[in-house]
Length: 271
Image 1 (cartoon, helix red, strand yellow):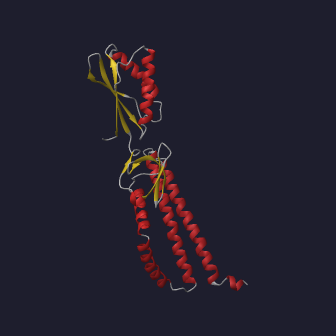
Image 2: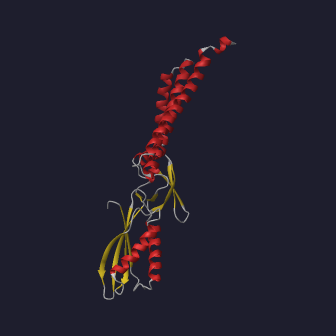
Image 3: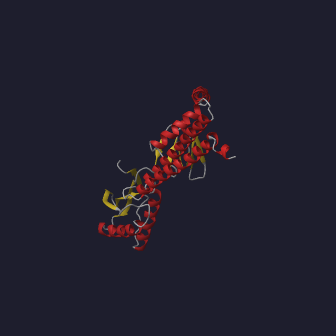
């Protein structure tokens, strides 16, 4: 019985499999520890970490398959199977499969390109081929995007023609609003400072409001402009909150807006 156990054809495959599992576990551990250290770095944003995590998970998946293929070939060698002919056969079969599954391969290549070129990641707000929503799943074959209304777009990666990523950079939100000429500039800026104290507490706001000043003079009013630095795609929430806080301040001070003039302009940081 002991002699049978000591036969290379019995114990070598077991050693190869166990060794492969240990090697993968060690390498995966090293990769995870490396990522954890990078996450603690002060200059790493949540968005950057999210992308880095996706790429590392993909790399770990590829590593797993490479190790598995090597182990299988090593075990076949133990059983004296001619692996050279098998590899050649795999190449021929692979070419045939490649022709039969061209679209699948295109999707795989497109998915890898999307991930490594940081086009978008899961959780990003994007507009893909005119459809806007949150990326709820990013695979090597297809991407799923959920709109604010609940509709889900499932699109093959190779069919994605245009992408607008609304989550990649911070947003500058420019707001113009009409103020009665009876409200002095100093009074208005006092009220805006009160608004700022509330607004800056929001997680969507990066820093204090910039009071840019009077944009336009009218007969009985003037247009005032402010600038708010928001997180990516945070301008919707910030816009509503700002208007709500501003109305509260106007109501407290019996100030009426002289007309229906409010202009919103948002642009990405760096534009």
